[in-house]
Image (cartoon, rainbow, N blue to C red; front, side):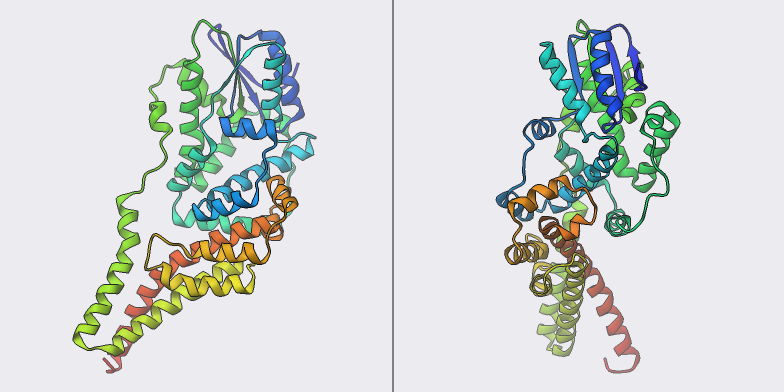
Length: 394
């Protein structure tokens, strides 16, 4: 018998917990199909992840360019970071992440059983998680990428212990919530609700074996067994809408800058107008350039970031990272092999060393620096004005 935990809810639903990466989890799927004899196998996959597992889908140049244009670089980086950590554990066990899910699908096909995909689309989940993360939490992710590569793991993770020890799983989930309460809610609580609702919708008359990551077992069990009210699937599937506050903040600085320029021009105070132009340009250019440099962008990409940021910061419909990322891609265009290797991402340092990863990092970090520029410019202009007034030059 495998050590993978199982939970029965009534006579028709059995939840099987897996580690997503352990060899034992793959064997447990086959074992439980024989023991439970389900009519339906529900797997913690969405359609896009299911297709990727079956077809080993690859990223191509046009796909990378689309990611840059649509501002999805942070989503791809976040997804790659999560997959990289799973893959690191999976390689230790001789399995790739999702192997047990693919095994469940294959066993279902062999025995002519129905397969139900019960997880929410990964892009929806990541977009909602990114939306719920505070700015400081996004900064932490960048620093964790830089630090994790140089640090050795002090302790090996025993996957069998992780599967059998609910306290350990609970602790890992709470660590995620502590790092980012908003993202934790999306990645854990919302997905528990989504998965539970999808399992319940299959029908009571059918026997369902649900293959889930072990971290979701207790949450899904609690919802189904206690018939807890959940958000409608349609609401959980919604892509996050732009908040009024974020829209106001995006347009606040352009409106303020143009208003001040207009006021100084009207009053003939050209010294103040020049100071404002200088502070705005320098702050935006330097911070965008720093972001691009942290991503180890090409010097021309760094220069592009510096030139574009003061302009794009005045137009919320544009982003400096798009231009810097495009220049980086044209100068050091990733080959087909680079793009394929990036999806495997066996080491965190590939974000910088792999040409495809570097394009995404240049795009994301340039945008991050450019987003900080207007705030620094505003603080700098106020400070400089007060300083000049204090010494009697204004």
